[in-house]
Length: 164
Image (cartoon, rainbow, N blue to C red; front, side, top):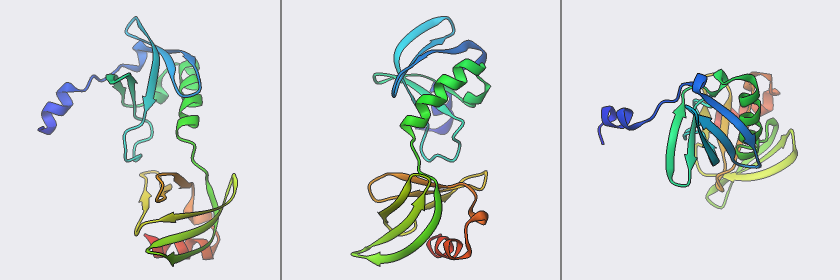
């Protein structure tokens, strides 16, 4: 499908006309332009280069997309962020203890804000976000974040540079 057709089919939502009414574990009840939708799943489009974009789904129906959910009213934003934190749980890498080749994959040993973790990746697996953060996707689809690569110790920065 041509890009112009895709853009025409997307329903862009005005954050002034969207309210999050209730948040549960991984879904919200939302009012869009005066109509209430229950059991809505907020999702960020992949890749996560633009984490402020959120698309609302109910079952298989796409209700619309917010270009920047941070423009919602404070209460709606708080409720939506609570759900997004659960859906997109991302441990933050504080230190890289080692990266080695193991059985056709790379084995990473890291310390995160949730504790020490060992995970495996295929080849180059690091994505640089516009704001300087890095995302590392492991072979099982989990994502780890490096919030400020320059603040890591020199050994950790060396491991990152080898994998980029």
